[in-house]
Length: 418
Image (cartoon, rainbow, N blue to C red):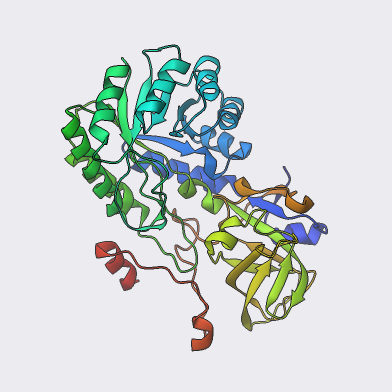
C-alpha cells in the first residue's frame, strides 16, 4: 500500500482515474486504544463495519483480541488476518453448514440466537457440544439512534424468559444476553435503559447471565450530528451494569464498529461532469457512498486541487457513475462554486459501511487503496475537531439541509450549550 502525507500529494504525483480509499490506520489504533482503556470489559470489533484486512491487522496490533463476525467469509478473514483471535458468531440466524464449520474448523464457541429453533439448530450442527457460549439477543425498546435496527432480530421481552432458561440448560459453557440500541446512537442513556430491560428479563427467567453484551451503536461525527463525548456512553453502560442483577464474575462486552473505523477512511472521487448544481462522480450509491444515497447523510467534503479555489461556497448534489437514477446523493455537499469537471473531491468519514458496501454494478466499483497520514475531518478521539460545522446559508437554502433531531435530556442540553 502506497503512503502519502495528504490526498493533495497523491493528486500532485499522478492522475487518478479510479476512486481511491484514503485510509488512516493510526485513527483505528487510537480509537481501539481508547475503548480498551475506558471500557470496563471486552471489546469485540464488529467486522461488518469495515472488513478490510488492514483494519483487522491494525486492531490486532492495537490489542483487540475478540471479533464479532456474522458469516463464514468474515470468520475466514479474521482467522487469516489475526490468527489466534477469538470470534463470536453474533448473527442470530445462521445456516447449519456455517455453524458446523465455525465450530469444527475455526474453533468458534460463541453463538447468538433469538429463537428456540435457532438454539436447536446450533446444538444439532455442533453435534450436541456442551462447551458453547450462548448469547440470547433481546429486542429492546429504546430511542436515540439515527438508524434504528429493531424489528429484524431479537426475542420479544415477554418471550425472553423461556428462551433464556432453555439456553441456560443447553450448555455447560456461558450464557449471556445481547441487544442493539441502533446505529449512530446519539443518546448515551439508551444503553442504560436497554440494560435495565435485559435485567428484568433475566429476573423473570430466574437465571443469571455470565455475559452482558451491549452491542454496538457507538457514534461518530457527521455534518449536523455532534454526539456527546464517548465517555458519556461508557459511563452510562457502567452505571447500567452496576444496576443489573448479575453475579460478580459476569463479563461485560461491547461490539463497536462505526466508532472504531469511521474516521479512518475517506474517498477521493473525480468529477466527470458538472450540470448546474449536480456533480457527476466516479463513485456513488453502488460504490462506497451507500449511506450518502440511501440514508441521505451529508458527509463532509472538500475539494482537492493543486491551485486556488473560490472562497464562495455553494451546495451541490452528487450522482454516481452508474446508469441507475437512484444513484443519487442529495447532500447538500458544500464546495467552492468553481468546482468543475476534472477536479477531485474528498468525501470524509466513510470508514464505516463505505468500502464494505461496494459493489461492481455496471462495471464500476473498482477502488484503489492508499494510506495517508493527515488527520481525519473530525474525531471523537482528539485527532481533529469534534464537529463539522455547516455553512451559514440563506433561508431558502437552509430548508435543503438534512437536519437530525437532538437527543433529549442531559445529552441534548450539553449539545445546545455548544
